[in-house]
Amino acid sequence: MASSSRAVWPVYPLAAVVVAITMFPFLWMLISSFKNLGELYTVPPTWWPEAPSLQNYLNVLFDSNVPRYFLNSVIISAGSTAIALALAILASYGFARFKFRGKSLAVGLIIVGQLLPTAAIIVPLYVVLNWLGLLNTYLGLILAYLILTLPLSVFMLISYFKGIPKELEEAAIVDGASRLGVLLRITLPLSLPGVVAVIVYAFVTTWNEFIFALCFALDSGTKTLPIGLAEFTTEFNTDWGAVMAASMIMTVPIAILFLAMQKLFVGGLTAGGTKG
Image (cartoon, rainbow, N blue to C red; front, top):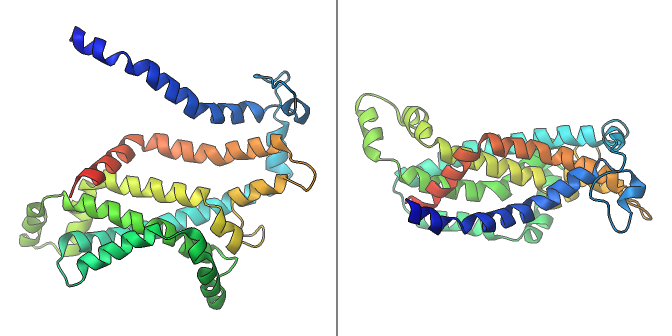
């Protein structure tokens, strides 16, 4: 036991350095959100606000469109995540459990879809959404975000479903359960870490997405938080205090989501990467 402890202790300083480097931008953002504009431009910078103030948060919450953008982000991210999860579950279960002609090609095309650069699909996607009358709508952005999240979601769940013994499902079918009933009552509960991993991945991806929102959301009725942050920048100045406060408001929901589902999320990613 003693030798094992001696072998592990060098990991702690390294872990502390990694954590410090990772957390520093977030801590700096938090501290800066309580500074006034003059203090933000002080050189050398102050590490702690001389007179902490909530004015930046008051400006963001009551004198800007950030609350509306926050609501837009919640609706679009939640809607896109729900649709991506439903489609990914059905598609990945079919790929994992059934044999059919062209299965390997279909899986390969799904992976290729994940590798397509965003810039290559913006113009054709814009044309399609415009033809369907879905530009500058919640539904248009929700469907557009499926292109980003669905391929990897399907791929992760295929690996996870393959690791669940078929005998459990076959026994339920013998007892009279339908294939859909088996999926909902047996396979999904056993696949909870993988499902949570897909939920967190899809929600975070759509919440932070910028390019699609910039191209397909044309006014405050559909703009999301990443686009809203740019409104604090003018031709001659940037209100960094408001930017930091808005960034904190944007970051907190993601941090809460990840912390609440951390164990299942990590377990889903590792299991999905090793099962097969």
